[in-house]
Each structure stands twice: as structure tokens, then as C-alpha cells.
Length: 268
Image (cartoon, rainbow, N blue to C red; front, side, top):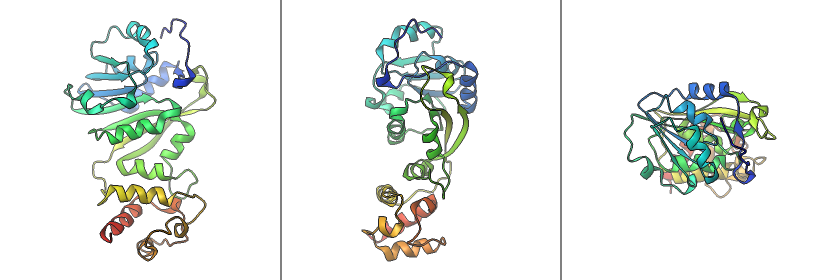
């Protein structure tokens, strides 16, 4: 893709992929069809966008850096099913932006800037879109946390949060040498697929607060992290799953957090 002597901006975390084979693998993982709307955040030079457009019904890209406008228009001029919004994705009303489109499935496929990965994902979830799947390139260490299993040091509140909504899977690694300019870390492609029959808690505000509090101090056990809660109630639920107040949050699966949250809600 032509960059026309583009000056990369650290403030936007700009590291552009330069390997077409990796881009194709990303699109293959997404498995989009010609009745799909795809949201892309940060198209950069348009390398991924160019692979998305032939497969999707419509692609909606958000680019915060207006200096890329001429480059993107030049590189993607052949695609009539593409709209690029040159604005800060974090300030957009996503539901309003996609309301004019007709589609059967909704996807997010993006190479996310490392510095704002989690806020972008949170915004997408908070926008309450009927989303089928996200395929995202993120920093490897971040991807490890997103897809972590219980009883691992990577397992944290963000793991529980994402797994509440999605089946999270690590797809493949991307070496730092595949970017220009080369970042200081390796990347990973993760997929987040909507759970068709997910377990929904009675009160999500209580659930998310409980999860955050449980992981507040990672080296402390549940007794210490949840000392402001009814510990007798907490212990009663934990014992059903062969856990107790000396357990740490990293030992507690999603379904236990949900049941614990529901019991707390009932006793409010």
C-alpha cells in the first residue's frame, strides 16, 4: 500500500502491517459474508480494509488521523461499499452511525492501537450493538489476559468481563517485524464470538462491581478483597464449587461470579 512519505504519529499508536498474508489470515478468521456490515477502527493505510471490502456488504472505517485522508482515498478508491469517517471513534454514536445500513450480521475487524485497546472494546460493548464477532489484533500480553484460563496469572477482571459476553480465542501470533515502524512488542490476533446462549446475571451493575472488587488486590484472597460484603453469603456460594474464602479471584470461573452476584442481588 502506498504511504506517500507518511509521517507516523506515536500519539495515535501508528504501526501499520506490511504483510498481505497476515491480513488475509485475519479476514479468514473473521469469516464474514456478503450480507455483513464490518466496522473497522484505525484503517491506517487501508491494507486490511482492502481485503474486507470484497467480502463484506459494507465496510465502515473510523480514522482519527485526518492526514491519512488522501492516502486512504487513493488506496481504496475502487470500493463503493466503503465509508470512512475521519473522526475519533471514542466520540462516535455507533448505533446512530450504523442505523442507515441494512445487513444480516455485524462484525468488528481491526488492528487496534495498543494504547487504547481496552477503552475501544469497552465502547463497543457499551454501545449495545447486536454484534456477531470481533477479530482484533492486540498486544500479545493483552491478548493473553483476554483469553486466560482460571488459575493462571493472566486471569483477571477483564477476562471475566469479556467472557461474560463472548467466547474468546487466541488465533495466531504476529511478530513485531511485520509492522512499520516496528513496535517493541509482539501482537496476537484474538476472536471474540457472541455467545448464543450466555448466562445473564440478575443485576449487571452488582456483577461488574463484584468482579472488580474481587481482583482489586491480586495477591489477596477473597476474604480480604470482599471484606465489605456479607462473607457468610460469599462463603456459602463458594463452597458449592469447592472454593472458600481463602481462594483467590484467579481461581473463580465466570459462572461462579455470576451465581455469587445473583445471590448478593437477592439479599440486597
